[in-house]
Image 1 (cartoon, each protein chain N blue to C red):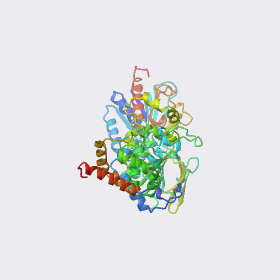
Image 2: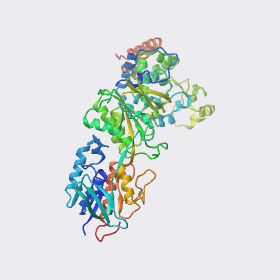
Image 3: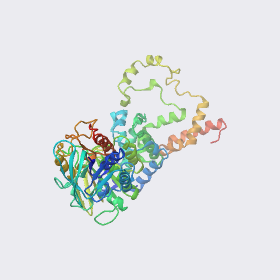
Image 4: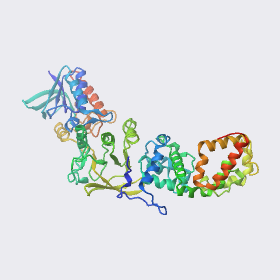
Length: 350
Length: 239
């Protein structure tokens, strides 16, 4: 029987899982809905990856090449899983490809369908994201950095003063996303550093609730941003953005200084958090696996088993499980690969 | 880097009672502070965590916060730093308890630099802050010592804590329990060996410390200069 590990999603976590399974000698099928591998970093045109500022395209291309070098790997682009058999593994997985539907037999399915950026217009029109052209989000700035041109969308001029507003769509009971999105502090600090390097005369502020720089990100990103690049960290969240004389007035409190503040900005960057992607929600439903109240896949035995889902033989990795950084994606990918490969042939365990 | 807070839209406390200074002057003086070779090692970045305030004796008794010093400097906030150079820095007791900063900052050291610039530039507020210290400056610079324990008024310095009162009640007994050999009193405290005085005077003159006094008190400066030159002349030393 031609059993294969089916990985749904070709982003950092899916690629990590597929490469690991491939290197363990397993036949692997990767199903990717887009026409290319690489996931969010490529789709959203990230300039560089956190924390080491490597070129996102270079890194993701390297992963794609690693995958292609595996012995028995099948990469199905522009393809989607449209059906999974009921009952116990092995599963009959139906995949719609541009050439038509194909069937694969999978003792293990790895769900790597990822996240989407929080939409600042989802509940209410937060900070005028859809109203003011100079209010953008982290991924919009990434695309500008990749183009090598950080400008105000309203007039094409380089901004003199830029600010990041943290926790947009995260840690918010009213929005419903009570969780911390984990990476935005680091990503905003990384982008702030890149803006300061690209525009040395600019002033860059980060307005935050509290900075969450775990582990080495402290000295890799936070300290250099503040000490070397003089990014201004101000504890206090912006309440609103108002247009004023061609600029954007941000209003908030400088909490540690104990005073209200109103500062005109040229570019306001919303540090939007993570939400389960449409693909994660749909695939979780199709596979019949439990999701938590936010729509992410619920890991069944945390903290030491991060990848098992409520259905035996189905594993979830990366940001399908909740907010995650790239290290999380790589580690959950590797763990899920090991657990999946252990289920191939007679070696049913995991 | 231009100051973020020069912006008219940024609300801040106004310093009551001080004359207005042109922006250029503020930038020049704060530029001197930030260009000081010690500055990069005294100020990295500020977490705004407040551990320095918790450790600071002055913060308990005055409207002084080493965190605000570090924050203003970390943010390159010219307006606020200048305001602090007019007021806050004179409330620091320079005990350096703030050195326990997890980022390795030294807010007290930043205060030291700001004081030096304030004095060298002859800021009116520096003169004002130091006006009451003429006698102390005279004693320290002429003898190298200023107080002996029996001079202390138990309630003169609230930031020394309430224990001062208890200690001063049985001061003589306490001092006999402690290791220092000298039991100086006002009668003996200012008797300093000639060799020590000569070394001190050379230091004051060579480092420019005496020149700084000229900025805050011309009278004291004149007296000290005469005293020092006379002493050094006796010893055949030319500075």
